[in-house]
Length: 324
Image (cartoon, rainbow, N blue to C red; front, top):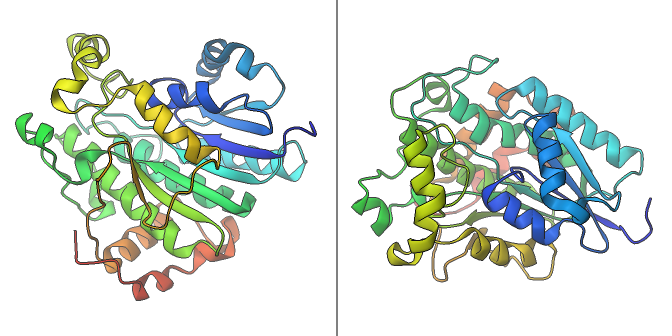
């Protein structure tokens, strides 16, 4: 192992948008290995080209992980475990779960028979985090990138975007007509995942939900029509300030000090690009229900994760406010 590289981080969704902006800031930093899961080998080659010299020092590790498939998630997690076990990288000090997609509708099912929005955005990061949890360093940080859709903003009201309306996970796995609401529910689910992880990790570790704000210019609308994509990626970034939006550059600048352990994450479990935002209240029973159901759907058992992951009943004793 490179003696200068004594820490490691994992970042999903690094091929575009906020993930790529963040990767350009943290990949190749002295003293850090980076593990970058990508959808397929082609995307991996494109990411290497985008990172250029940042990925040329032998401390950047591309792992194929199609988040629409639990088999691919298991294979990717096993490769990450092997990297740590073989001493190629040290235990993970930072995990950033960022990859997501917003589809036109929620009709398509993945190879596991699960609607692709919930499979990609919610169940994949849940299962990936569970399966790599034994490889976390004693002071590991988990940052789960969410969305302002978990609490309605002025921009959402003006755009007639509904805030997330939770449904039992078994129902979310079924196809539906509303792709936007399916996306919003997965982001609320990620908030529950952040609350569960934050309540279960051992002392010294931490977990937080990161709200990047409304961020045009990302690849989140890749399933939408060409006009929507051009408008979102080429036009809105230049006028984002007019509706309180956030640029990719600003989001990456805000996140990088947390990723590199240069700035304390605090103890609220909620971070945001914009100052003054707060997390919505949530019933611990809802967090517990989500966590147990997600483990069941993704097949996570006691032998698949760190011991603390298999203690969800501890969440029921934690007072985190009224039902969201």
